Amino acid sequence: MLMFLFAVIELDNEKDRTFMERIYIEYRGIMYYQAYKILNNDSDAEDVISDCWITFCRHLPKLRQLDGKSSDDLKRYIARSVQNASINLKKKNIRKKEIFSDEYDVLIASAETSEQTAEEQMVEKIGIDDLKEALRSMPRQYYQALQMKYTDEMDDEQIAALLGISKSSVRAYVGTGRRLARKMLTERRDDDA
Image 1 (cartoon, rainbow, N blue to C red):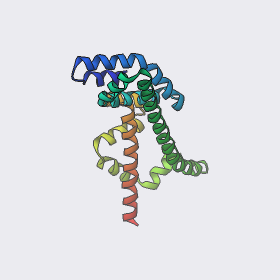
Image 2: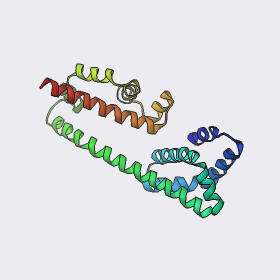
Image 3: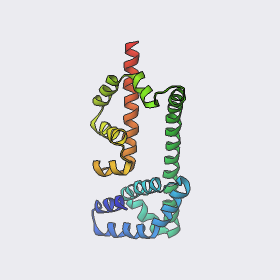
Image 4: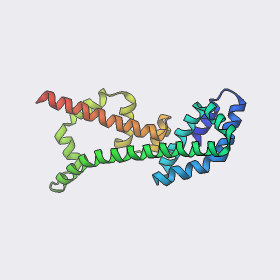
């Protein structure tokens, strides 16, 4: 709901704000139902709805055109937009889980045969100094997100509130930060070899 309010506040005139408020009241339930049906996660469903509202505000003339034809056209457009955004997020989450799962499974398997934890083995393998240097050299927003997530053990909602960004942005920052760190460490390891 917060993203909806921000998106509506950014609209230039009162007619547009009133129109979007009416659309919100009429279709919010349908949007949530469509997103939750695909994602089975309240937080992800809310993120998809927020992203869709921002998109709808940018495509206001299209919404007005569909609203003028028939309410069914607008309803189908909104439902289809939410479905597509939900499917895209679900695919993205599956890809992330597969990539992370493969790497983590290797670490867990080796940790089970050792007295060290997976994290300790990873740090030992990479080298703590290399890891620190990689983290310090990345852009500040990624470093902050990683630090809050893994060092401070905050959840996405807490990080989002502190940084003033959405939960989906937090997840994007953490994912990008991990990819950057992995890339930097791989390049460093290749240079040393």
